[in-house]
Each structure stands twice: as structure tokens, then as C-alpha cells.
Image (cartoon, rainbow, N blue to C red; front, side, top):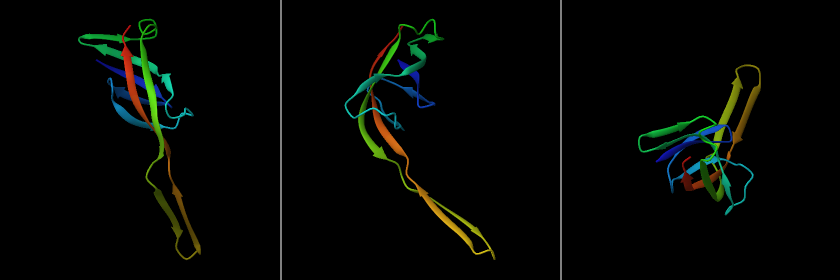
Length: 103
């Protein structure tokens, strides 16, 4: 059984007890929440659409907050005395799927 869920405008294909990284959602480590469900597949049966997924539920637990790898960028224009460097680290959360309840 698997489900396709949406967290932070990104979609993930998840199974029970799967651990994955997502953008930070504002939840604290140890909290559980229900993710928005787009599709649930159980054996050969696929549930799709809001009416058939109203009873379905995917519970996700926040394991930890962490930061992604540093991304470095550099801009340069020759002969114009223009140089600019920048860096970015994305705030992430490690999530675990606790339970998938089909409709």
C-alpha cells in the first residue's frame, strides 16, 4: 500500500514507516499531523479524488529539524568591478509516515 501526499506544495510517494525529507512546515519534533492526500493505492484498488478520499488518512510524525547542504553562488561581470557571492541553506524536516488508512 502506498499514498501520494502533498506537503509544502511538493508531492511525495510514501509507504508506512518511510522516512523522508521535506521543507520545514512549522511543526515541532515529536508532533504528528495529517497530510493532504492526493491518491491511495491498496493492492489493485486505487482511490483518487476528494469524494473517495474523504475517509482516508495519512499520519506523519516530525522526527527532527535540520538544514540542507550549503549552496554557493557567484556573479561576476568582467571589467565592471562587479562581484557578488551568496550562499543558502534550506531548512528541512525529517518526517516519518506513521500510518496509512485507506478509504
